[in-house]
Length: 212
Image 1 (cartoon, rainbow, N blue to C red):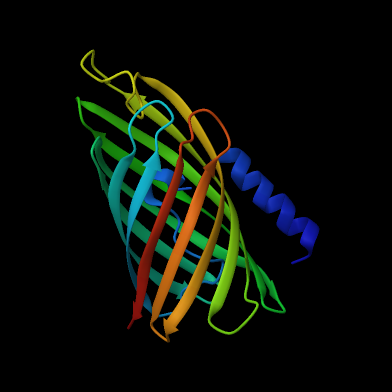
Image 2: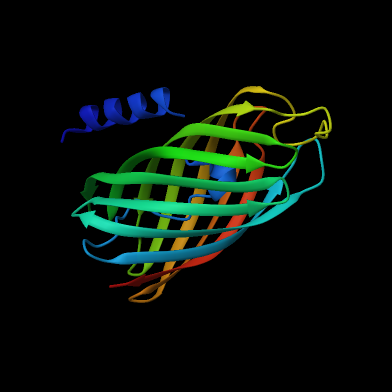
């Protein structure tokens, strides 16, 4: 696929969707897909820098599967002080050459929020990765999420992630690094930088284990 077509596809995805919320699940991945027939089990703590409140901490776990060459799927669960999140997405590696790769992805997510609230949304992402040496991968991503939040009661703190009912859009740029400690074990770290008022900065580091 030619570069202009890839750019158009990626731009359309980000415009229509919005990533399984970067600060909800973190991304914790490069543009390289899971090998077909292989599973990926991952876990990572996440620290969110709340602009209007104390920092929030949580833990994210996910399981992925390589469906076909350049295509994989993943399901995630995240637990925070304000609720529990569930999500799933698909990722397609659209281009690769000379240690570089580009992937696009998107999916759905939802949350059971404390205080009687709930959220449901769409996600989208664009990831570029570069491997300067064997085992090391540097990545940069654009990530966006749309959430429709309902049933936020009067008892919800004003500094909560979603203080009221309504629609929220969050956009991020996410630099990251991955290192293959061994063939089936990868260490990952990333920083999510919010690009708009609803997107709080975050930092995450964790591990992914690949198995059949």
